[in-house]
Amino acid sequence: MADMKTDDISPIIREKAPLILAEIVKAGRILLHCHPSPDPDSVGSALAMKFALEGMGKKVTVIKGDSEIPRGFMHFPGADRIVKKNFFEVDLKEFDLFIVQDSSKEEMISKIKPIEFAANLKVIVIDHHDSNKGFGSLNLVEPSYPAVAQVLFDLFKEWNIKITHDIAADLFMGIYTDTGGFKYGGTTGRTFLIASELAKIAKDFPDIISMMENSNEPADIVFEGLALSSVETFLNGKIGLSVVSDSQMKEKNIKPINIHADGISPVLRSVAEWYVSGVLVEIEPNKVKMSFRSKDSDKYDVSKLAVALGGGGHKAASGANLNMPLAEAKALVVAKAKELYNL
Image (cartoon, rainbow, N blue to C red; front, side):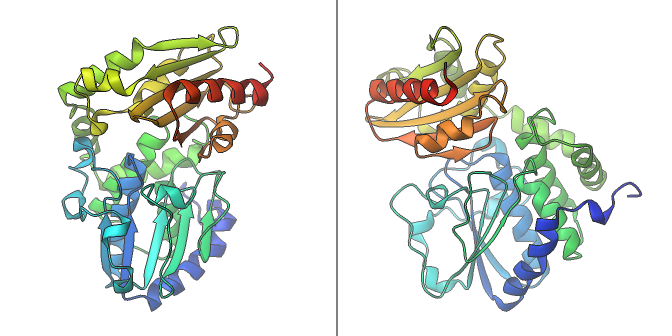
């Protein structure tokens, strides 16, 4: 593409690309994963990397991680080859290299129990979350990029990887969704140029988007209705939180896979008066999953809120989990928001 200049690639990516490639060349068997409650950037990036590595002649395994892959993502190219295991169900001795993507800390590999890497396993982290401090032996963290899929596009260019239809489709879905349909912060003119190049290769991208957005189960809609009817406001009406209890979930027969907190948060964010919005879901007794959004991420950086609660994410979108009763979690979120934002 004439307007796509290689010198537009992040210096961080240009520096780390040959180092990562050298480790890939040395490896025989490579492990990839999807993070808990995976989004399209996690799934699409894992699959795109799988195709790229297989093109180099590597043996690659992608595991689903803690959560089931949502039905709407199962038509992404390669999704049918995701192994239905979490991190603790694989034998790490079978792998030389573990490439961890779209995971700001070890808990985003698995929340089942603390992560311990085998001594033989080289760990490379590729991420775009500002809260990622680097927990791999080699780390590529580029928070100026809106999606890991965009990081991979530039990595693949540096490695002279041929962008096939399947790679293009998976990268496009990661970029499209993590930018909120090209609306979120971090989206640049170059993001559009990259998306355009991918769309020219994966011409069926409208069909892939349509299948993703129209694969809901009835319980998904029930959850959305419950979440939107369970909103409370705090701190003089400047924070709006949807608070859903485990008992409400059971009453409506809503399963964990039907919980789409990331889909509710942007709806709450649309309310002009709410500077910070969030969804708190008690997925089981004393276990609360949270998703936050910011109206003005420079003034109300929700990654700080998430980190204060043991989570992480971006300035405009973040999340965390708390192991405590829902009422206590709600009170703690409000107290931390008041402290952080002087509300």
